[in-house]
Length: 395
Image (cartoon, rainbow, N blue to C red; front, side, top):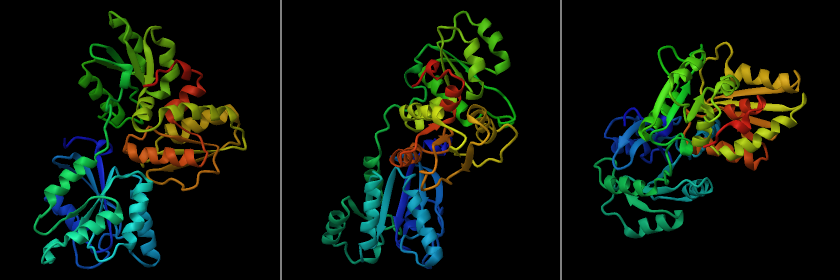
């Protein structure tokens, strides 16, 4: 489980006032001194994430946040960053000392609005002579969730908290990256160009995840580069059931593939795994409506230093401008930078999102949908521009 990518882990975020014991609670849950603990209010200034294995939850990412009662200009910025964490959270812990619930009520409303299941923790119960059941009942009723008494200092209530969190875990559904496109015994050919964009000595994350998914299914996975497609196909007794390619060589692979083989790409698989693939396919039609007066936003999950012929920064903008004209405006954001208002754009094109968890990707999809802006992804865009989207298999 230690090798589980962060994007595939359960994201658990802790929210609460300054000095309420969020960092201490993270340390208690993990059994490690992960977060800095201090009596000084506001010690945690930015969201801090830590990947851990916690039974019975499994692989998790715990996110410590700044107190949502921070004040001043800098405090407002910290609070805004804390609010952004809601988009990543699969589950939340709302930590309180029970003295007042005004801000907690507001944050409980934000979590409910974002469909994030949460539990309230009455922390520092070791400082109380006894835990008033009436206080717990009031917290539970007003916040609309379970309320658990916990002492991060001596460990009281931690097992109950872990088990309660396990009960809040979202239904995982099918975790298969390839979905219904491949089954046990199928031969699957993976076409993986090893160009300057590929990390030296390594495969990129979507390729690794796809390979593991195919092995878990009992498929026969065969890998080759673009240059070796013909030789690889000739070496097979029968055509592969499925060919998965890098989107950048969609057209080359489509021309060479056997008629009976299905075709998709790593980016398309990630789009279905992380986001709303049907919405992405529907939104690709907006490409046909682009003009030189249009604006497109390209969003990358990675914050890597761009290399020559970068797919998001160079190749896709060039494809679009060749199609609609050089006057097309293309803006690019990376990592967690994403405008709160995208209504000024005619189209948003997102990468596969392999560095983001599904909850975070879906929050961007929902934002675009709510603001009436079509959103698609790299692989879908390339397939549509090259005129082969109808021939691409969608999970």
